[in-house]
Amino acid sequence: MEFRCYPDTAATTANRLDVSESQVSAGLSPMFRAFSTGGIDTNGDPQFVEPDSEVTARGGYNPLSQPSPGAPTPGTDRNVYIGGIDFVVRVSRSYSIWFPTPDTTGVAINSPEYYTPVVEPAQADQPGGTSITFAYRGADSIANAFAGGAVADPELSGLQMTAVANRLDAYGDHYDRTAICLEIEDPMMPGTMIPGPNAPFEVVHHNAIDANVDGLGILGGGRWFDNASQINGSKFFQVRASFTSNAQTGQSPVLKTFAMGWKD
Image (cartoon, rainbow, N blue to C red; front, top):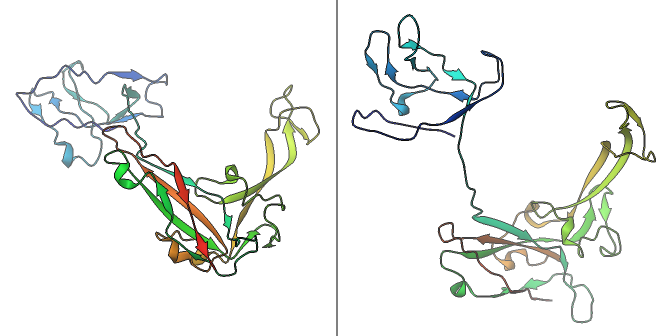
């Protein structure tokens, strides 16, 4: 948090900038506040601070110092300002699984061409100041980067790239997380590690393989495109929906229908 108060001899305020003092011995780190404040120095002269001109914390002036009031103070201390903050989620994103592109008989199309998706509700029917935008990326085949090869049947391979959306990370990528338990902590002797994984204690230390499960031949190196036609020729496609809310009204857009079409 940053507070700026510009010098004004006519200004008055009821804001005391309440603080709490951390329970750390005097003069010891960590310090929680860095500041430069005006005040009255030991000569009785007023000292003003221009917030925009401060590049280092110079401290202030102690009106209770002895033998003379106004002794300078350090620029850092252990005080923590009492404050509150509200976070508004303005943009959130949702990712689809990888979709194959078969024809009406279920046979994969080698070089599909994509139509502009059908989306409901239309943008004109969304709450004011909100929107939904879509992005697309395509791949030639589904692969497991850790295994190093394409998967003949993605749905039966166990990777579930075309079946389970909860395998996606925050960027729409799939990961095959395989945990190999090497050792665990003995709850009766904290800090003592014992062999795993069959010991009946909670696993607290393990070696995990985060294998990136992605697509081979991803168009543009995994780049997201604004138009579906830009991924023409890709046998698999993935969709990203970006929901932009109205931070002032608190309203968010709604997506009821998304239909993607393609042809040979």
